[in-house]
Length: 210
Image (cartoon, rainbow, N blue to C red):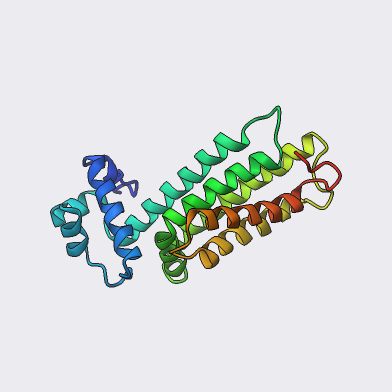
């Protein structure tokens, strides 16, 4: 029987073509196009590529959305590694630095994220991708809680289930409250409010200075 394992199309063509398709797709979404109105022909033409090149990378537009979301997750985890991996000192300032970068990542990819949320309600593959996206963020918050717990600085009510609530609260807040024309200063204020919410939920009030 033929194996169902499929070599990734991204491995079969130059990566700069993928970058062009992703950038063009996100630009079209930001410009007011919808997932359904963007055709493969339009996407390839706008990216300066042949239509066939799209299919060297992706079977359909849904795979392109999944690829974008995996990139978003990589950017978020990279930001977390830079700001939250210090085992000798971890406090509110480090969480704030991460949150500011996380908000920037969400802002850069806001149109694709909104598209993923919309499509996940009826596309099983994208629903699975969205679940992985959220589960990974929940797991990372649990690591932060455990890091605080190991030093006795965690909030006594910060059970592992709190991570689920915080991850979804952050995602919904970014998706619903970040506006296309928000300047960077306003985005940083938004990130600082998220920092307050998350830090207040996971850090001991008596030892939360960080």
